Length: 293
Image (cartoon, rainbow, N blue to C red):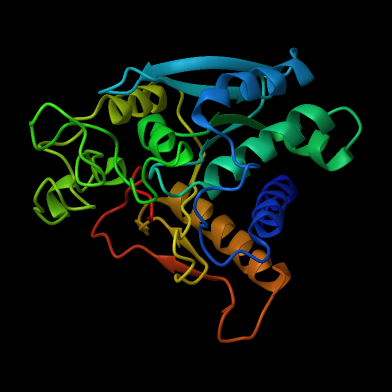
């Protein structure tokens, strides 16, 4: 049976995602004015911290590799909370929705913790580490309207001394050390270029070091479909059935996903909005870091 605190956490997070995604059919460029621009990031994070300074702490966990942009992390919760949850809103620059989702969740935690009983109950059990974007360089390019398809960071991978969009860069989601060798060897101009070696990018080193210092019980990485063409899926990690802790956590995740599938609103014709599904990674051994996008 799934613990009540986990049910609250999962259903609140998925309800937030469903409401944010309502009616979307893909990114429209230039981005609507409601989307956060790179230059306004610190101001918005500071406003979230000011909602409840006793509950919210704003940290910089590192800097991006090419433009030295800060990698912000909101630490929200009580230090004595039993479980720690990592949320990353964005790995890919053109996947702007996840960033908005995690920031709205941060605002809800900070602003409703005193009067909302459900939020208070979640915070009794969980402490949240929220990284709005692990790719501030890609976010800067897309949010400024310089390119609608800058998926990667802004490393000068063709070594010509300038940023060529959207060819330059490394796909941060494929630069993690875990299973790096199993990703295809693609040329630097490819949108899924994994980098010259595992963890070659400072962004990935920063988040890996955070995980080493602060072990997480759950990690949720948001991805979105810039074209709107992909169905709604939740990807679960590979499972080592010999590890009792993993088996228990996996069962909890399945219950959360199933509850979300039943409760998620459906909009549009059935052929346009398939039911939310969840899928298990086919990786040969358990992994934690690689997300699904």
